[in-house]
Length: 401
Image (cartoon, one colour):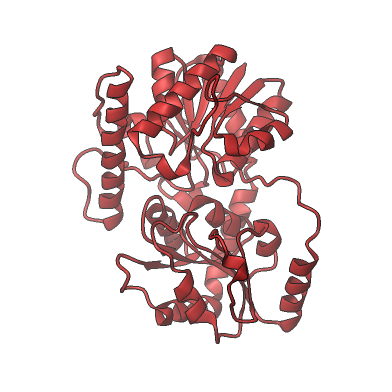
């Protein structure tokens, strides 16, 4: 079987795709990738071919513009060019990469999507329910569908507006990166949705970082709790980082933060802070007491696979859905930011103190860690992709799979 993986140009999306691709290759399937040029050498160093956008390569599968119809069309053209060089049996896209869905329909191929840590669309047809999460899910879906229909028109496909449970935005198969203990009520999900665990993967660790190791050893020796802080990738929704600095500058904790902003490492912070543009997440999480982050998939799953409770500061996108799942599972405290004025350092500090004083949060996070550990995510995903490829139709549903 031949699988063409279509990944957004971000480690948080590319790395789990590579985890599944490695498992398919272990089973003697052929695998190739389309993604942006930023990670071309990384994909190739991982042993896979990355097919360019065309004879003249260029940007594609950009996370910053995933919801723009022009980007969806660009992705579809990239995939169709790749299919001319690699005759795939199955396309494997991602829930926020909608171009592969267009290409699959035009080329008559089955398509799977690698999902997030929660189901972000409505599970019932008709008007949204009274819960804020239901209204946000409907708004997110309807907004994406409108843009997707613009892209469909641009590639000569008719408009699509089926009921929510038949949404075209999840492909023939959605591999949701969670477990029943976190998602809850899995029987309400559309039949095309299957749960595959976290599917987390990180490349082999870089050479040791003496400065980081010394700082972490000192933090451990201090006996003060260590927190890992990671705002949203592009700080688009809310840059809560300055508020976190103000909140924790006099609290007896240690803080390691990954802030993707040029020049951040030259700024001055309190001595109990270590701030970099990038830190190896797993090396910090195995020593941490908790995280402070947006509700994005990679950092939330990273925390839960280490049994860590979270303070989640959410403002948009998938963050609402994932953060609410964590709160309902008793593993997170949530703060909602709607405007620049409704989140304060005092609120963040109080939430951190509550997290430290509530052992049940850590206990629930540990139970989720155990649930995630029971699922071999890449193997489960590979099983379902093989089934999709062999049957060339939607897999039958298995209860609580």
